[in-house]
Length: 95
Image (cartoon, rainbow, N blue to C red; front, side, top):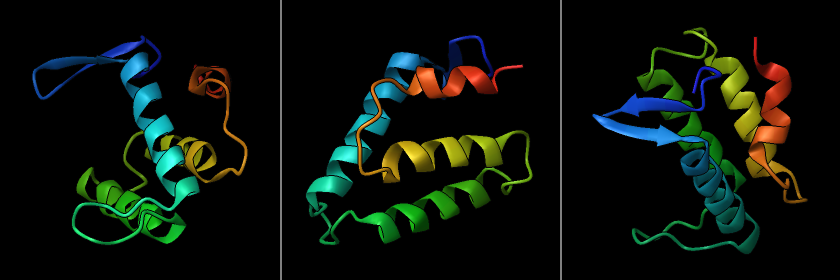
């Protein structure tokens, strides 16, 4: 979101609430071992594989601040304890 709280993605305005819902869903799927519609269980390995594919699609981890964003999302999705708010962890990363 580049520190402004909202970003245009595919002609839609997305904001911190969208990111919060998405990361919460990923954490819940991982901690509950949810099977996805196409069969695989959403676990840490699948999360990591999909994250790596998306990083590559966006230009690689060296593009912009993707490494920082990926590290933040990793902590939010892979920690055993659910983080209260993604923004609390992200504020310190703002410039």
